[in-house]
Every structure is written in structure tokens, then in C-alpha cells.
Amino acid sequence: EDKGQTSSIHGRLTIAVLIFQDLAVVPLMLMLPVLGGQDTTWQVAARSVLTSLAVIAIILGAARWVFPVILERVVRTRSREIFTLTTFCVALGTAYLAGQAGMSLALGAFLAGLVISESDYVHQIVTEIAPIRDALSSLFFISVGMLVTPRLLFLDAPAEVLGLTLGVVGIKAAVLVGLGLVMGFGPRVAVLAGLGLAQIGEFSVVLAKAGEVHGLLDAAAYTKFLGVSVITMALTPLFMAVAPMLSGGAQKIPWLHRVLERKGEAPDAANAEEVEADLEDHVIVVGYGINGRNVVRVLRQLEVKYLILELNPFSVRALRDHGEKAMYGDSTREVVLDHARLREARVLVIAISDPVSSRQTVAVARRLNPDLKIFVR
Image (cartoon, one colour):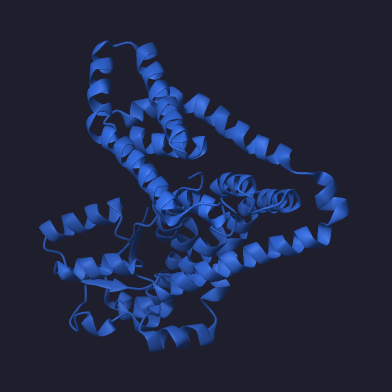
């Protein structure tokens, strides 16, 4: 968010995976008693799971139909104090209800966030509670750090902790980079998202604590897990800082592009045959976010020929289904801009929220077409 990358392709992919990881905690928490080998029957386990799912359904139903009505009446009072207190009561009440149903308070707090996010007044809620949210968020991470034993990290088992950290980062990054490539996002987006997601998420700490309670982790393993978690979280800013450089190197790996070409997913194989053969004196719009959509809408109204260059394969597919001229490819690569007929284009509009890619695209485009007019967000 600080770097303005939340609306970029790799930013949206990263956030989507992060949210899905948080949601995945729900079934895992429900399965912990069974995994812990408690003396219970499948009927009892199924009843517990169904009860928890029913509570979740009730909470989400209340978020859609009950909470908006309550908040509507609160807003009519025009009292900021009542508004803020109501929000806190809903959040704490949701967490308490989830805890009474056998789930953790942390999971209940997550559900409370979902409840509040459905409100029409969510922006005002965020404004009112932002200072308290930041303080409590800091308190959470500080409390996690205080659980770590420095002696374990630096004296008792530094090699083991280091090995576990490298294993977690390496495996997570490799899996996510591989999935990004398989889904057709290309090497650059896959590396940026993979390194951005290489850490252990904060909900895993909650899950690990519950695992210790149910006998799935002993005290020593839990302590080591906390140490590895804190280290990977602390390294995440470093990973995100070096990711652009590594992603640039990944784009230059010849064998990787050959593999992707055979799968029909590489930027080189960006379905160039679908670009109109007579496409010239046109506008190339890089990125189909809010700015890109606005530019395309105006060009369409003015009946100016244009081509959309987008790195999200799903967006490209949807655009083509609606009859738009769209091509999948990374604008920082010369071969992609050649397929987009940059040399015959009149204007290049770079409407992506990635400064590094914008600079690289400008450099390549200027070299290919010195007389081209270039507009950059």
C-alpha cells in the first residue's frame, strides 16, 4: 500500500492469496480437535463442524441484514461516540459469539471484520477506529515478538532455526512462483507475488497456538515455530525490496520462456495473430485498471483505434469476449511491444501503478519508436 502497488497485477494477486490464506484458517481450526486425536466419534466431530458453520452463517447473515439496520438507526442519532461504541460492541460481540461456539476469539475477530466490511458506512468506521486499530495491531505483533526466546534463536539452535526459515521461504516462494507461471501471469508477476507471500502469516500463529493446545505441537516445536515466523515477517520488507530486481532477471531466463511458449502462456506467445494486421496509427493502452478503462472509454467514443496491453490473462479473456482488441503481454519486453505494433503506433499510454515497470516500458518504447508520444501515469 505504501508503494502504491495494491492495484497492480502482482498486488491484487498477493492480496487475493493473503485473504484466501486467512479464510483457510477457518476449516483448519475446526479440524484441529480431530487431527489432535481426541477420543471422539465422527458424528461428534461432524456435529461440532456443523455447529461452527451454523454460527458463521448466522454471523454473516447478521452482517447482511441485521447490522445495517442497527447502524442506520445509530447514524440518525448523529453521535460519533455512539457510532464508535456500536462498532466496538459488534466487533467484540462477534468475537465472543465465535469463542462460545468453540472457535478462537481471533477467528471471531476476523469474522467481525467481515461483518463490518459489509456496511455502507465502512469508510467512516475505518476513519473512526483507525488510530485504535493501528495501536491494537502493533500490540498484536509486539506480543508475538515477546513470545520468541532469543536464546533459542542465537544460542541453543541457531542452525535449525535458520534452516527452517530458509525452508519456509524457499518452499512458499517456489510454490507461489510456480502457480503464478501456470496461471499465465508471467515470470515478473509470479516472482513479485511469490516473494511478497514467502512469510508465515499472522493467522498461522493463532493456528499454531491452537495446535499446541490440542497436542499437535509440543512446547519446543511451538517456540521454534514462533521464532521462524517472526524472522520471516521481519524479512518480508527486504524480499519486497529485492523482488523487482529478481523479477527482472527472471524475465531474461531463456529456458523459462521456451517452456512457457510451449504452454502458450509466455508474453512472446501473446496471441499476436489476433492483433489486426492493418493496425497502425493507433493508441496502445498498457494496463486496464481505472485509468486504463477511462482512456479506453474516451478512445472508443472518439472512434480512435486502440489496443489494450494487459498482464492479467483473465482480464484479457474477458475483454476479448466483449469484442475489445486486447493482448496479453508484459509491456517491458521488446518482443511484446513489437507484436503490439509499437513502431506503427501514434501514442502509448502507460496506465499501470508500477513505477519500475513504467520506467522500463518507456525506455524500451523510446528505443523502438523515437517519435512516439508517450503518456505515463
